[in-house]
Image (cartoon, rainbow, N blue to C red; front, side, top):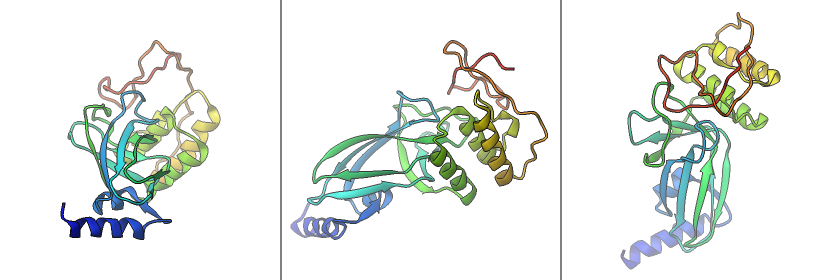
Length: 219
């Protein structure tokens, strides 16, 4: 790297000192180096995204990862993700950090994220999806019912797929998703209890998905 280029990078970093920039902007301005992959330690609707980041500048940076930001998989058969809880990351000069990011899948019939799949920062999701992701963050709905609600908006899944053991969660998600999707709630909501031994199969899925949850005892 030339002295001139180094001076430009330092000047850019110093110009952001004390302010917050987005991850996308930090990458675009060459202030950080990132490796973004799927997270094998999480199910696909909690923290399925893993960020390894290094501040390559000589100034501290505050970086935001916005609720509603999409991350695009390098493999076309793997689901893209959308952030469901915003993050603020403070990184010292040359410091490295690892962060698992709250997010959910947005392509129902693709495979779930995996550690060997890389992701790139994408655009912000559309307004309806962002309304849902904000609702998920506000209510801490990082669960399978909210994931099913997400697929109603992204993949036209049935509203009846929104179910879990907590009736208030189901009702709240049904009401919002019905309004956002324009679909009517013309059925009795379904509740179930979790079991660590039984695989989850969405009622909309044509076959058993590769991303599985655990559920049994449907009522």
